[in-house]
Amino acid sequence: MEKRAASLFRSLILALIPAAVLAAGPSPGTRDFNVADYGATGSDIQADTSAIQRAIDACSSQGGGRVVVPPGARMTIATIVLKSHVDLHLERGALLQGSPRHSDFTRFSSLPVTFDPGPPPKIGVIVYAEGAEDIAITGPGRIDGNDMAYVTDKGPYIYTCVELRPFTVVLRNCRHLILRDFSLTNSAFWTLRLQGCDDALIDGIRIDGDLRMPNNDGIDIDWSSNVRIRGCDISTGDDCISLKTAPLSDGVSRPCENVVISGCNVRSRSCGIVLGCDVGGPIRDVVVSDCIIKDSHRGVAVRLSLGGSIERVLFSNLIIETRIFDPKWWGRGEPIQVAALAWTDHSKLGVIRDIRFSNLICNSENGAVIWADEPGHIENISFDRVSIRVTRPAAFEGGQQDLRPNGREQGLRTLPTSGFLLSHAAGVTFTDCSVTWGPNPPDYFRYALDASESPGLADAGLAGGAAHPGMPAWSIH
Image (cartoon, rainbow, N blue to C red):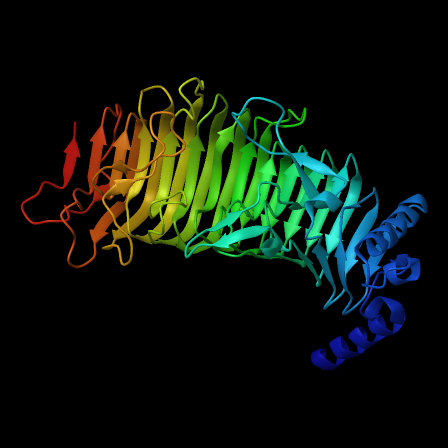
């Protein structure tokens, strides 16, 4: 009787809902501006760019709605500029590909860091917005960076490229953003950059970059706040998700803060999820949880090379698998890295403090590295229920650590491999942590814990022996 009553109630409710609400497609009242109606045909770069821009301008001028790239449409474009209250909606099979000519782009974003004299290079952008609010890019279509148009040599592990390569998407000084369900592929430079933005949801997007393409970061959160990244699948040569306060900020100065990253799967020839290293201002109040990082050169990292600060960060419930790749990519198989080293001999250095790692399972070709060359820059780092299994490198040379960028040297530093390698890190604590070793460890595999000049070390919560019989488990000096 109860089941029949529930069924009747459900039928009554459905009967009262208009058919338009139940059907797939926009909500009632949503206005669609189909780019085909504004002259987009897929036959000419400049004509299609202009047609899409006319649709965006018309949508914004009429109070907002969806600018629709229809199913199966394939267009090569230069720069399009999103406006307030516009949802750029890419239907299934729709493709917007960036122009193969950098000279076609009309909006630009600065290179994030340079120490060369003179003005920094300006890099073109395929999809751009500045000072807009209530904007969206939604799926299930695709935006493609046309990366191979900018490659001059296909090396076996990393490509050589022309100097000027376009960003795929840059949103600058924007508020109330939704980026959902679409795909970003084949980026020639950074894929998605939020610069000086506030209140952004990045939900369920797929980023598929070439694993040999340099500088094709997945998501860069740069001087931005109140950002949620969830349920994304990211594969890139460079860092998958990176939080920054880049020195060349085009006048943006808000902190990078209140960022939540959850439920993502990532793979990188550099770092899976990293805070830094280009930190010209504060990065703080960040939560990273429930993610899987596999087949990466470095797992998670907190890296400081300039005068900013990184503080109050939680990493929890992560599975990390790393392996060593070609040294042209930063990283050396570390599942965890916390590093504070000056980028140049003249760079001032800030502080990393109050970083917690909890409930991490790591299987890697190197151990965790917490390193500064001098005291005062790393403090209060805690490890709780972190297990690391260190295995022999399968393809590339081990026994080295990557501390780049570092004004003292730009190559790898020869250092042994330990489960946890500490230098000038104050207040490091371990609770219910462990280090184990794979079979046939090489000679440079050493201790469960190798710590130097690290006051306030609380190591009672770390279990595990040395890599070789007869060697002490810990080396503290």
